Length: 317
Image (cartoon, rainbow, N blue to C red):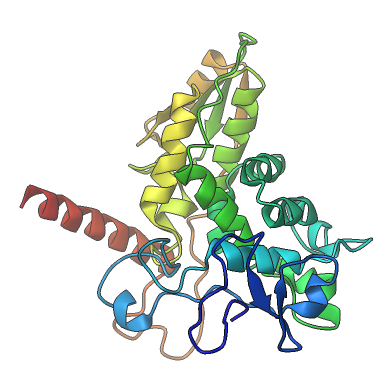
């Protein structure tokens, strides 16, 4: 741990700008960024203890104020200090981040304690950092220049710490467009692509309606990603924000089945298709016909519905 001092595992001062932390050479010095990638080791935030995780449905990621595994503000500053302000940041190019997040910029803002500016910079390229910060496989870290000679920056940890802090501090609020264009757009599909398209179109001033054939909004986020990676409350929180911003959501709307596509064309100025594939790809392998072998998406939908039912029962009790 970068913060350990002698044997008591406590920093000299709990204020990041004043504390002294352990460097690779064993000395204890104030946190600095100029040679951060040389002075400090990578320290990825660990998952919650497995013995606790098996007792609940909650995420792998530790919660601040509850789990000891959660990094302190000092450790986050130390990890952000490792970002080396390289001349060509491959982390944010096509070889790293698919959405071209401005990673070195918000790493530096976290180092300087400018959390409000950090979430603003993160939102410039990423509509839903609380989703990507949890489920993205982090190709940015694989492309990190520091990783060529050492270990990469903990980019993924820093990303979701920025957005989690923003939600906690009330920095994420509804952005209601000041003017409307009078144009209407129908978005078919409420997965990450559909929600992102709806968000962008709504901020341009168009009136957006999202149609989803399932009974809950979120698509893959809701029915494809397990709760231990992405809590459904996290998805609902963002959807509720989009609703407050003026986006309308229609569930149980199966286009071509109980909703006529010609009606959409007639009632909206534009139609955006952001569809996911729900047709599974079977595998012709030995044992495929054994009992208990199911397609993942079907199993996930059953699990989500089962958990929702269990929570409803608990609330009634």
